[in-house]
Image (cartoon, rainbow, N blue to C red; front, side, top):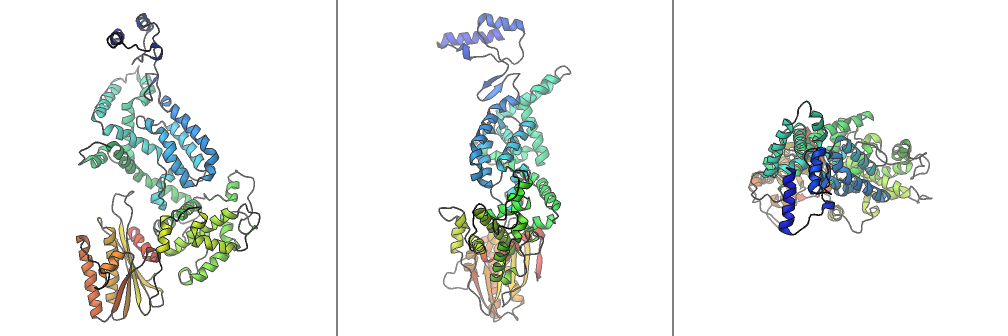
Length: 602
């Protein structure tokens, strides 16, 4: 066999006129050669180099090649990359660091991770380095950063390196029939090579064998995702005529199928962390899930870090052994710089009391405390959102004043200013999309001599769920502006966002019709301008409803409106921005979790 190979090389040189660079060439045999075979080879090729581990197109081949060899170069690049970023890490926020890891660090391993299943010891080394890059003080496990969207509604989340590795290996083979055929043959060869005398040698090199890597990834997926990879692949490939870009499109569905299943474990981890601090974890997690969707991302990050003891006060860093002693409070210069003191600091308490006086009907007797921020006290969604916003403002003012030698004259006013204008301290050249919306989201004008029926419907993001999740909420507000009663309901699969909003409005119409002999003036409020224009009486700005999925709901609302008019009830409908419809927005989200609730007082 070797003589034939060398003869082919010589024939190639004679036929083509090209010469093989012997000094840069090597023979990589599929088995270890005897001394006699090596001598025979070098009779015809005196400087022939025989190698059992050689790099070819970025991968190491040969019987001495190990999986550690495959990852040696990218791991070296990873260490150099982290070293270069170390000086600039403090200038990056936690979300920015996560993006750096996803885009720049994990991509260094992408080529190898498409062919090999990363060994457990190397995986732990990489994850430990990434965790140190994300946070110099360890305050949580790395895996929970992959579930931030489902747990806290955060749009930036870390890729799970192991799950992405498994998804990449499976996608690399499932889109190439010839590769799958080669894997099948390779598995037969590996299974047939297990003998009492060869088992040790096989186990030493099988981590590098493509067939063995595919088999382990396949078994991992079956156990972790609870289904065969073919089920997910079939859903993605069904109906596709072109295979262009299929492999890239397969990685994400395979990855998400495993990520959804891993959510249960990380919810238990979060529940254990909250319970260990003495809080009712179930109540806290449910209230986080039902926060109004307009709560800004920056506020959600503060809440996530608070719940897992990850806010970097000097007292927290000192307790971790990074610094020797805690600094005094940046707001009052008296107490220590800790979360518990910040929430009880005179400056923070004074600002909160001013806020309570401004919004007395809404806030009532809600106090600024750890219990309130861990949602242990009963509060509607917009109050919870305000508590989180206030915490974020206090932490931002603390950051601005921490290293200043003197305090400004009005710390309380500074906290309230940051609460009202968060972009002032964000160093942004222009307003963000959410802030541009806030500029045009005008508060609804006061309503006189009319009972207000507000309604809302939501359709939650389906990325981390196999089923549609929709719900509606409706509330009745008395003439003095107090909440009288409310209702909510969960909607079946296939409901759209506009359908959910129509369901909420329809329930408000039905409640108004039940009370037609009590409420003589009614104002209906909905967060959809389209629906408000469709349902209003004929006149300027009237919109038609032509959607088949909405017409039944639309006609039901119109019919009830006509009956109200016939009963002598003067009613109107108007659009209000979601920012001013937080109670119904929260009720809609609670309906998805808790189910239906008839009209009742809070």
